[in-house]
Image (cartoon, rainbow, N blue to C red; front, side, top):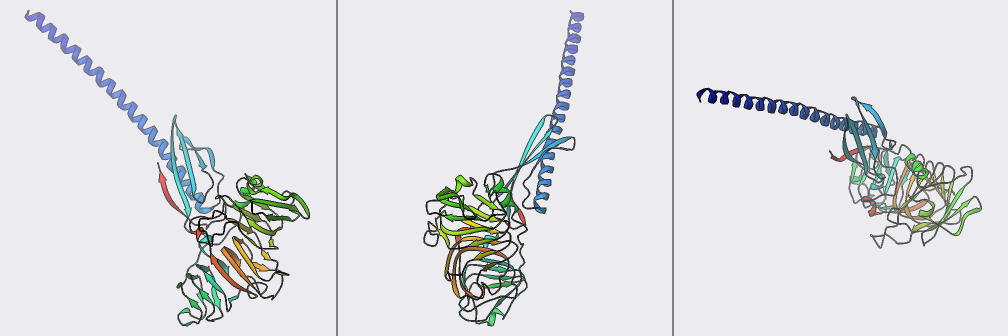
Length: 393
């Protein structure tokens, strides 16, 4: 029995040892597999993070970059960069792949400021001055010297910021700076309206004859009448804005003439842009007046590469509701030194102040559209500096 017992003990020990070694071998293999799997997952994740840093760098260099990248080899894997739906917030999606594993990183960027934060925004004052009777409700900014004729009837209800200086020191001026002021504030300028142009070509409407004038007249029901010179392309009663341009972006490389009318949009809003000049023959204002109804969803912008003109040949007094941009030039008028009042509700940007044609002739009454604090028209140019607002891994 002793011999058999010893034999059984030895066999049991061998079996246990074999099981132990097998189990340890399995554990070792599993540990290696886990280590390799973990390495591959981490590598895929790091490629995705690197892709997001690449995307952020490209966006910081060019705010309007939206072309993305597809299946780019990187660190023995690959990555792709995509963009979410076009809104004021830029959604960036990076998808990576490494040895059969994929990972995704999302980030959201927004401009650290908007041109629509201001009632009036001018880069170059062109030596022009605010004149007696001029009144601005809402913030204004210039990167230049803000000049004013030091008169108690000139009133700035919002904060005034200037890059270089404010003439006739506000502390002792007759001009009323009721919202305060600050000097030494420099902000970005518009680099281009390419975002608007691209949007019109991808889901909007691009006028097919840039050598001709595109004329638009807005109807209270939400339609727009379109002419090519004097020929009606979409005659009265016109075509719905979003049937013409589903994403709200309308563009012509040539002159755009606005006959005027009542603008009725969806909450998405609309934008009309020109690679040349925009000329207003008559007033444009909203069907649902945001001055009396802050919940109005009507919103439109007019952005010209060069000038925005107002035809004051027969019309001296104006009332306008819209967002306006003269990216490389000025807001101006067609007749020199013709007096009148320009009542404006919205937010405008111009590269430089117009000459006596407009700004020294019109008595200006500008009111800020407070809805623009939270929203701006679709594809409207933003300031070129961005900030990261959220990051998801």
